Length: 274
Image 1 (cartoon, rainbow, N blue to C red):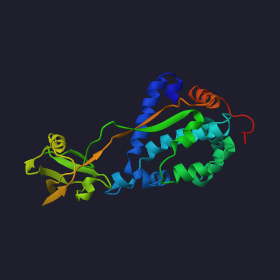
Image 2: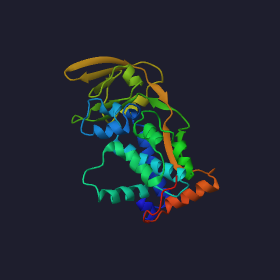
Image 3: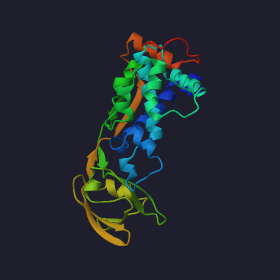
Image 4: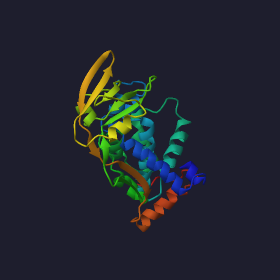
C-alpha cells in the first residue's frame, strides 16, 4: 500500500501483486488445517507434513491486514482505518512499561477505531474455514474472484523437485489427489513410469502422454526400498484468484476505495466513530 500511495506502483501493478498473494494462499492446503493465530505461535515448529497442514503466517497475515483495514473503513464509514489503529497503539506504547498482552489486541483496535473486531478475529485469525473475501472487500468496492482455466489438464496431485541425480523427487502430495490414492509420499523418487525411465526433465512429458483415467505403473524408490505402485491420473481445471476493483461498486464504496488508495498520514484526534 505504501508503494501504491507513493506511486512507485500503479494500481494495475498493485492488484497484480495482491492477486498473486491471494492466489498463493488459496493454493495452500494447510489454510484449512491451521489458523493464522496458531501458525504465528508455531512459527519455529515444522512437521514432516508441514506443506499440507500449515499456512504461512506472513502471507495470510498480509491478506488479513488488507481485510481488517477494509472492515474498519467500512464499519466506520471511512472515519477510521488500520493506520489509525497502529498510530494509537504506538502512542500508547510510549506510556506502557510492559508489552501488550495478545488478548488485549482486539480491545486496542476497538478503542482506536470504534469497531468491534471479534467476528473478524473469529473468522480470519482464529478460524480454519475459507475466507469470505466478498464480506470484507466489497466495503471498499474491491473483489477477489476465482477463475477456472477453460480446459482441464492432467492432474496427479504431486509437486516434485530435482535431486542430485536429475531424478524427480516428490516434495508434496496433495490431499485427496490421485497421488495420495496411489500411496505416494514426500521424499519418494520416481524411477520409471510404465517401465520407461523417468527423470526430472522428462517427467511432465511422460505424464501428459498418458490417457486420462487409465492406470499407470510407477517404480518408486523410497529410502532403500523399490516399490511398484499404481496411479490413475485425473483431470483438473486450474484455478486462479484475481483481486481488483469491483465494477458494481456503489458510490459510497467508490468513495471509500479512493480514500484507501490515496490515504495520507494524519494524527488521530477526537473520539472514534462508534
